[in-house]
Image (cartoon, rainbow, N blue to C red; front, top):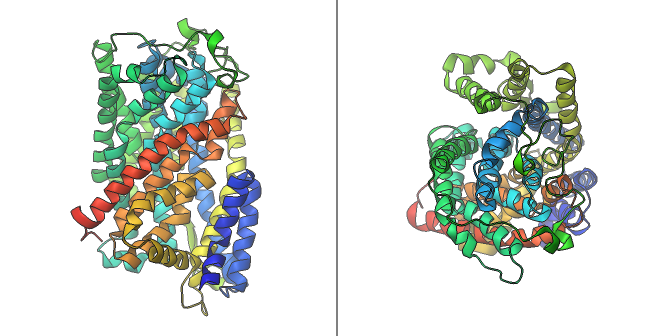
Length: 579
């Protein structure tokens, strides 16, 4: 039994050693982990070659669906950057106040959560960090603020990808439908329920993240001789009001709408409320807080790109004029026009999901790439290319061209940049999801061991080891997955089935435990090496990964402890009869 557990865990252990221990890039580590999974599946789980191939193929199909979303999200983002609309959005936020604490709330929290909801996959920190740098933040402080600020939105990043692709698709393809049906749900309904519970955890624990981000910056990047949290407490009303203004529409969206919009709706509604309140003169701090003089900054605060340097805000040459504080003004356009493509995305997604005839039309078999019983096995895969958000993100990017009157050069640059950005995720995602599919399907073929798949074996062993305290660590397991793979989606794909099985073994409410997994996959981004490296690269500070990860352990520990507390309370006291 011990040998079986070790073999089941071997692909994940290889991922941990190569990614975390040796700091290999995912493009190198994941193909090796997939090969290890094939070997374990063939020799220890008796998987025939056609089943190994079929499981890998369905992994490739899932990866392509994710990449379709990622490409659309990145294309729209780079389209707005090329048009100058993103600079205008940034200017609208940044000109409200020159107090650094207020700028952290507006850009590091609201703008970062909005970008996460629209694009995901590490984009917020990579975009917001250079924006803050352009305002005069030390490079290290900019990265810390951007990473911490967006974490509450990660579960619903890229228009719900971690839930739709990370929870729904694996549960549907791995044969959990019968167990879920016993609880009275279809797999999509169950995934929406998971998303709602995840939003509940985030709301209860994460509404303080604006205050957390401000506190981290003022304490570690203020006067080094008089470290204090007092400047953070001065803006506590603004921070807490911002967290609540985000969390309420966010939570309502998750429970009563869909898993695709909580982060977008929370950031747009909450941001609009707080900006209006600030413009009316309320919640602004009485004192002004800024960083120490530039001459006093330690060398590890500063990268190769100086704060306020021309072009720092977008990572490309800034052709626009600059306003006070080094903020690029972009082309003269209204904020409504600058935001319009993202508003269009929300409208398109709402219409295509809420209007029955339209939803039925785009889900016709003609618009779905499907492979039933791949290679004669019981494994199937599909790509609903028009239904997934990627298609509508691309439509919005195309419609943005006449909205902004973009030139051919700007359009081609946006498409080129988006295409270049998905090359590395393409390789990593294909192999990591293929690996997970091999592990999930290792117990489905004729002649499979009685103990079940690799995932079932691991879940059973973990449940036996931890027993009734399992809910307290469910989020931490998800965080570990995200820290290794750099993605909430991949963490959910890897551990979602694991958590479901563990909950069933212990008689716990599965949607509450899987919801904790979805939250853990989000908070793991705080220390995910891929995200940290990407953010540091945008501010010219590669090499300071250890400092960022050590500092970000503080919010990670806070989040993990309190999500664990609520998971225990939900599972045993408040909602023990949930499915």
